Length: 478
Ligand SMILES: Cc1cc2nc3c(=O)[nH]c(=O)nc-3n(C[C@H](O)[C@H](O)[C@H](O)COP(=O)(O)OP(=O)(O)OC[C@H]3O[C@@H](n4cnc5c(N)ncnc54)[C@H](O)[C@@H]3O)c2cc1C
Image (cartoon, rainbow, N blue to C red; front, side, top):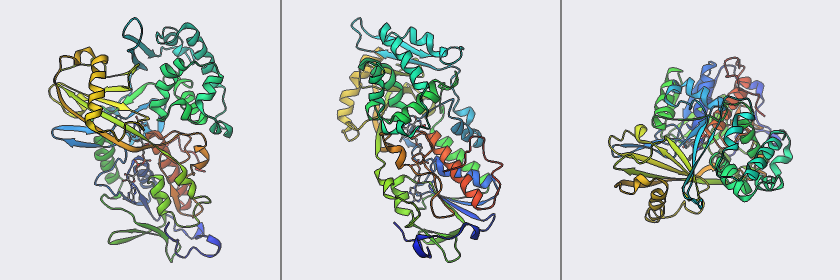
């Protein structure tokens, strides 16, 4: 870690009262957390510089060109209950480009029923919680009658869990499901179907606290909470172009291709942020970088247990992209059982493809496949797509490629909760943001935006600025 210059005796850094009201804030990291932080600070009247090491904003949720095709590095979805991400979309003027479906409706195709392929649906109706899912669950063909009844009982038990109970984070979700009568089939065909996509871990590897948070908030809070939203344009259009436009209008100085190499206390009790060829002086700094980078940039003494950041594990997500010469999937997306294929999304329109259809397979918990050669993945997945989507059988594959995100999310393992720091560090004027910080959410766009607003809110207090303009979901950071 870098040394905090002028840190004073006993690791005490500068006093908060030394900070100039108003002042200049530097936000390091132009992912969703950093962009949000920069916007929230600028909206409150602070002069802001945003530094991003890569040539674009958006961090882990971005697009790139492959010939004429605009490709997202990974399919990203959010739920109606993601109020922070929805605020972000509004703030950058992108809400209409990433709409939420009217009502939760997920086709679930099972390829391994004795009677052949079978389609089920997870959808809600207009009834209040938990009845909104009752009819869909009662008719869900991928579980026996007894399993469906038992899922209902487990859901009610889950609803009764107190998310503030720290012992939830010490248990794994899989054991809790077993203890609540869930068969291996119920875990596979229902709990993991949702959990793997939202947590990036199977139930047995997931913290009960995080799983309970996801299921309670998404499925058991408001009837519309789990309605699914996704970008109908490339992610870069939202997280880079429109974000950049909003930052410019808010007066933020945004520097891409600019990597911060150190953060230290300066002689005035403020902060110096070193970038190649320049030292930026700041009254407040938000480190909105991944946990390992945050660990390396944090000055000594700014966290009680900085090594905890290195103990937060990571988990990969693989996306498999296939372009067919014709339309092979009618639905915008579907998910599947009895095949390695997890979720399939139609990306044709968003990618700009003019002829044929472009499908993206989103494969979470991809530890076993993340380093496999493209040829091996092609050999495995094209036949699986033929099983799943009969229309692919006569279709020509025009393109096949993969995108690999080895550290897509933090691993939501039991015990991760106590490793995630809040926005405040022990060093006044220095704050942390990132999906991996203690937002209570798994590693999602929602968590990133929440963390960004949380860090901005904490910084505004120190800068003597009003938090009045922060969005409703802002809660005082830990
Ligand atoms: C394939 C994939 C699929 C996903 N699917 C979903 C999904 O469906 N729904 C969902 O909600 N979430 C999903 N996620 C997770 C979501 O993308 C992330 O949680 C979120 O984008 C993280 O944002 P962040 O700002 O916290 O971090 P990051 O996006 O990691 O941003 C950190 C930024 O800091 C920059 N940086 C690092 N060090 C420095 C430095 N020294 N100086 C300057 N800049 C620096 C990095 O370049 C990066 O841009 C997915 C992620 C992946 C990879």
